[in-house]
Length: 265
Image (cartoon, rainbow, N blue to C red; front, side, top):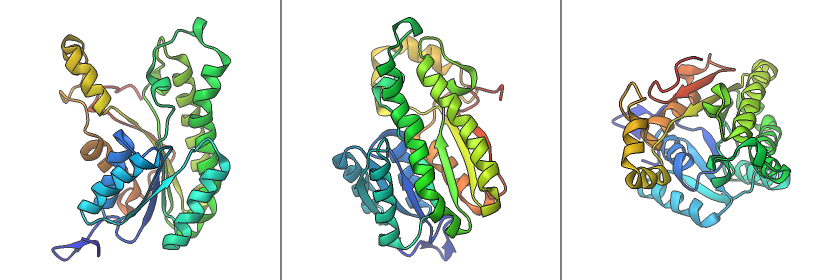
């Protein structure tokens, strides 16, 4: 409902404004839908406007409030323009979720001996530059919010490493350090900074598992909860919780949202 109320109870994020990068599909879309369902106004951003508009239509169908903005996080100017757009649209920004990644590059196995400088910088422009751009552009708005939330989508690979994917692991490990640093720096402004490490059954993963059922069964057996997470119901709702007042005293953390797959944090 557009007034953010149902059965007389305010939603967790009623009246807040969120921007989600990489929200045209997968986990980013799930997060955008969950934030909207919790009452937030959501700016759906991504490199392809068409996929962002697909997410926007899903939010519209649920009577949520959202806009779609084509944004390449590797461009500092594009990120600043997106946040200016949000401020002009709704007068504030309370939540930023930096979910964008380099797409297939980040999941394609490649040993270190085959990594080129282009492989590194292509992913780093999204993972590191994108997070830097989002953080710098969002800071003045999150300060003004009084209860700002900055969330980065990390990976368990950044915690325990990953053979055949050293670039992605290194970049996600770097995100972990940045999250901890910003939490210390931004805490006096009332801004919490956290990362989550999700394990979600996205559409590409579903396709792969249908084609490789033995691999699926072996992988699923590693989850104590017996399944991979749903982008909206499991990953998105965890983000909603971190953005809510209920977790306003949690900052500088890297939270695995993975059904118990990784327990050695």
